[in-house]
Amino acid sequence: MITKIRRHVLFGAIGMLGVILLVRHYRTPHSEKPVVSTAPGLTVATSQSPSAQSVASMAGESIQPSDESLGTPTEGLISGPPATISGACSQGVSASTPQVASVSTWNVEQSDGMRPGGEGFSAQRDGSVALIASSFDLPSSRFVQQPAGVRQTTFWMDSPAFVAPSEEDLRAKGDSTVNQQNPDVSHATFLPATAPDRNVRHDQTTGQSLRPIPDPKVQGRTANASTKKQDDQNSACGLSNFLYCDPCRPREAWKLPTPQFLACRGWEFGGWISGGASVVANNPDDNYNGVVTFNDRDREFQMNQLDFYLEKVTRTDGCGWDFGGRVDVLYGTDARFTQAIDGLESDWNQTERFYQVALPQFYLDVAYNDWLLRMGHFYSPVGYEAVPVTQNFFYSHSYSHQYGQPFTHTGLLLSRKLNQWVLTAGLQRGNDQFDDTDGRDAIGFLGGIRWTSYDERFGVAFAISADEQGIDRPITIYSLAGTWNVSSRLQYVIEHTYGESEDPQMGKSQWYGLSNYLYYKINPCWQTGLRVEWFRDEDGVRVAGIGDGNRAVGPYPGDFYEISLGLNWSPHPNFRMRPEVRWDWFDERRPVALYPYDAGDRDDQFLFGCDFILTF
Image (cartoon, rainbow, N blue to C red; front, side, top):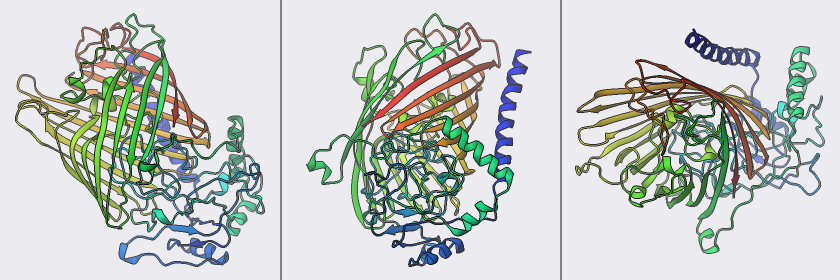
């Protein structure tokens, strides 16, 4: 009976996600054309959208035609005199933002070390990718991260562009009308876009503030809005006011100083520290949160990650050759889960029970025009969630990420962008391996493909790893992730993971799962998220309690379910807090000796966790 109730709750949650998305879809007017808003006197290279061209012409701006040879519209690059943000923070406050306008609402991966007017961008699944689907703040909020949807499964990254604030964003504080003379955009939404063929060069960005000019058509629609729509807006503004966000908070994150001899060559030094605690309702005797890893200790504070990195991001904007790379040193309780299982950290003879050191990334990048070659040790492009805390909305991780996907690879990756497509292929030593395991010098395949729609509201990414993990033990793992930007505030992500391996004694084993993510931006300081997951370890070869003294040792052939609900609070670009509640349960396929929770005594678990992230 209890099992049926759990399944009904899970299916009900998935059904609610579908209903929410359908309601948002049909309530959103599809006939309205996007609007580009810029400051007076600026020169704008707009897309081919009639609405965008009409707005630019009304403002007396010059229109540059799209690059037909590339096959996609050219996004808006703004240059000109600085525009000062007016409103509550007009006294000596000016947000320094890349002068780019876009007609889309796609959330892009972005380098953590990005500065307005920075040295270009490349994709990497690591701490340098700081914006996520839950991040609706200005690009300088480096620690605020997540779902570019296909972010983690992407190896190549485009140059950034940001949409002008929408009417909804200008009314985020509950104003009934938009002040056209002094629009306060301190609380506005700036969503990055990922047009594959955007003609934006990093050396042309000015780093000046963006002042949106309201469109008369938007004003007309506002004046004639229906009562129902006005009530919905007032309701949203009421929630935004309930969770306060200081409109005068800093826009630029503080960064560690980089030595001049490195900075002048494009290198940047930075990092972050994160820590938190989890409480399990069952109060397990072994103080472990069952098979939940990373935040795996009950009623104990954990410094999960102290990460320092040195990075130079390569230019892939068609300007010829460029060189870069990155090195990460990770210390904390998370380092235990990200170490190579063969070589590297496994040879360091670390005896500390929980706090250890890992070297998850050290690689060299060589770029030529729109080609990028990565050589070394790096985070895996397989999967949606990531090891660096700056890339995840939730404190805890999905089962697919914990047990179904690799964390690191050692090898070569070659990537190229072709219009809407990004193709990646390379060779690797193996999943989470650094040295040769069986003495055969086996080499595996690592690759992927990503597609982004022209309007940049949809994205799909596929990544696969195929190699041998031991003598005559082939293993294949792939992930398929899709992202739908329903609106400037709402994003939905779905991920499918599948893996199979063969063993001379056990035969063929399989594991697979489905994860759903829903993110909603309340205001630039507050976001909320929901994760609903099902993961099946068909033969009990993947999921098991990890850690010295953990009694949930497995095996656990069966189905794992989890529902997580969380908040992200970002009052400052360098700080974020992530409270979360999570419910896990397990349905066994055949009898097990110990259950996966409460030191092996229970098949379900209720967990509350909260952590902080401080970037520098």
